[in-house]
Image (tube, rainbow, N blue to C red):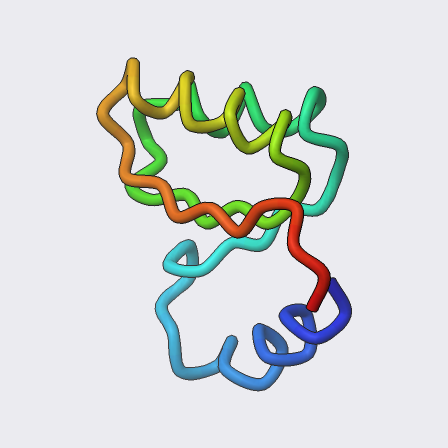
Length: 74
């Protein structure tokens, strides 16, 4: 997560507040609240296949677009 945090720090001054929000945490703690919140316009999730499936399920119920990067070794 350090890489994306550095990118966010570099571009924070050119984006309006609230356009890009990075949330780190365990999927069970942050995945469901994000994927069930109607104020969320898009979710990009990187993590385990199991948690990604959960995020996708909740997001689908709320018609929130999701991009998943699951279980790979980069």
